[in-house]
Image (cartoon, rainbow, N blue to C red; front, side, top):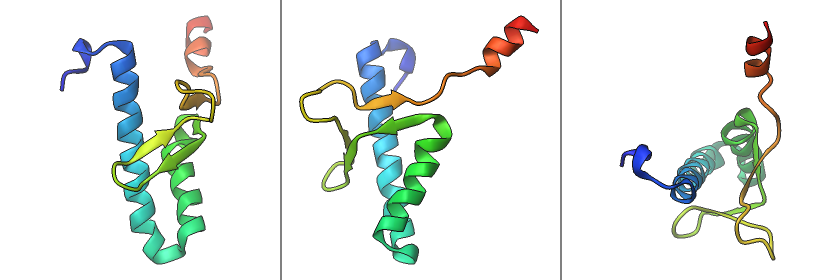
Length: 92
């Protein structure tokens, strides 16, 4: 599916679906070796931590999906750091 033709909302939803699927696949593969809690921690750090993202909750039952906080239907992903590398390149 070409990403240029998607609206911002559709693009964000597509990205959330891809990340949720990646997280669930990682958890299922690591869970066999380390256990459930360790698998969730390792995969969360791998999939979201390195990208500077955080999420509230997730579900791997049925279709993999990220869940928002109660009372907030839209904000599933949040950025945790600002990209300063680009700012430094512009200055220097």
